[in-house]
Amino acid sequence: MSKTSGLTVKGRIWGGFLSIITFLVIVAGVGMWGASTVSDSVDDFARVVNNTMTIQSIDADVGQMRRNVIGYVYTGNDAQAAAVKTLQERLRKSLAASVAAVQNPETKANLQRMQALFESYSANFAKVVDLREKRDQLVSERMNPLGLKARQQLSDVIDAATAAREFELAASVGKTQEKLLLMRLTAVRFLSTPDKALVDEVAKLGEQVAAESRGDLALARDAQTRKAIEVAVASVAEYEKAFEETAAAILERNNLANVVMAKEAEEFAALAEKASKAQSDLMAEIETDTRGAVSAQQTTGSVVSVIAIAAGLAFAFLIARAILVPVNSMTSAMGDLAGGKLDVDIPALDRADEIGLMAQAVQVFKRNAIDKVR
Image (tube, rainbow, N blue to C red; front, side, top):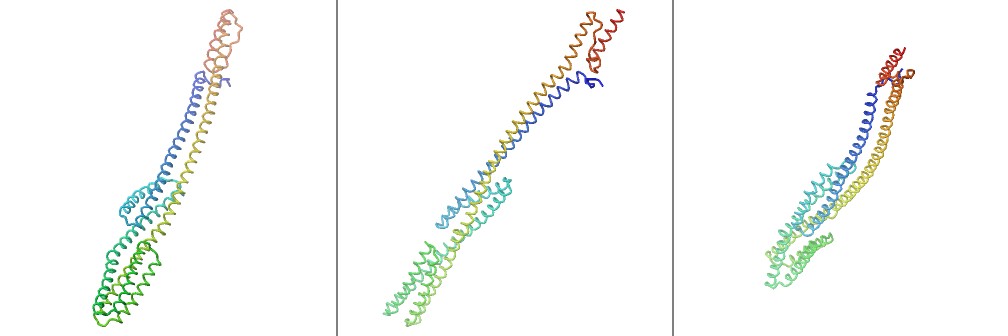
């Protein structure tokens, strides 16, 4: 087997060149891998930052919506109700976008729960608006007219009794009217400061009006007066019923706003904080991974570059040595042969490459010179 294993000088040069190219490709591949990894990390970081900002914006909008809801509950300001609806439209879009963008399963589940809470909160606010309108309608269309009507009817009975010199009846109806006034004042107090105890107090005063009216009827001497008293008492009963409906609407509205919706808002805020923290943790994780990837890429690139340089130098040395050593030996032998030294040994005769062919040609020249001398 020849020492050159059949490799030609051309093959050696091309082999070394291709080996160096291969190492350069590897270095470039490592660089591209590192750049791609960093680019992906930057994209992930940007996505998480956008999600975090969206979640924080959602939390802020919910806080503003809640303030407008509370303001509307106690003032009935239509501008605040309109502001709530505007915020609801924006929040619905923001929540949908966040759910679609977030990839972490736990965070996505929290955002979906936030969506459900938001829709429930919005539906409850719609009920609050309806109850507020019902309250206003009952007060303006039933309570106030009926209260005025009952007071006027009792006043008419008092005036008639006084004109007829039925002073005892007039005094008795006056007490009934006083109870009615107390009932109306208590109802007004409830409208400004809703308290279940005031509802019970109005009911108690209603019973007192009914009791007083029975005494009035006993003192009435004619059917017309009794009829007028009964009509007035019926108006008081209708007033009390209207107040009960109003109180029920107000208490239901307050329960929705101060209990049910408050709990929904608190849970929503807790989930928003949890989702925001998860995004912050994810940003920190991405930062750590990115730094690790950059460090690994730098280390790998440095190692591969050193290997490539070392391999290039080694290949260059081996190729040069494999060519220059036999060529120098061949040059020396050819110089000796040209000087008439015919016993010189021709090197590289056992090589199968171009140098071996050159050695064989020189060997022919040597033999011809020897034959000529002979």
